[in-house]
Length: 208
Image (tube, rainbow, N blue to C red):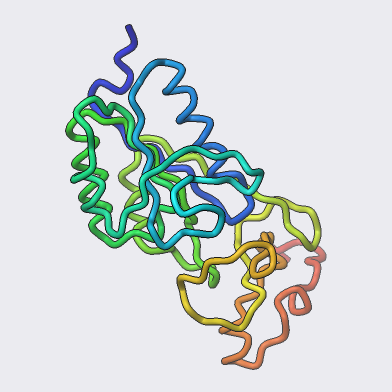
């Protein structure tokens, strides 16, 4: 019998929107279920884009989950037989999620988290930097830039809303590479040109 997760572990799957984070979370959940491990799946109650209860990927894969209002609820809802705890959209949780995740790992649970590592301004999102630092395993997934087709690491907000938490899909967000990502707030404040217009191809050696 494998004892890989006997001492508990923290796995974090991160990346921009449309990169397949939830698909990867569901893949790991299904593998654990095939191994006959009891899995409990949680998501923030505010995420009702596809379903109030299910965790649903952009490709319509779905698993049953338990919506919670705050991170401490995860501890309160744990069942004795659970061995794997999966948490989707972990960036939306309060800072107590760090305590919850580390406590679960210390108790011997395998904890799998999926979420955005950067917000719409390409700034570290909520508890994600700490979770990434504490994780035993990190998988950073790329999306496809909607402008040029290059690997995308950022989420471009298409509207002028400035709330950090703004639920939306392809009507509100696009995946972008570093070169085509544009911080609309900063551009508006500083009167900058869009980033793709500012960047010029480098020519010659940088050491000239």
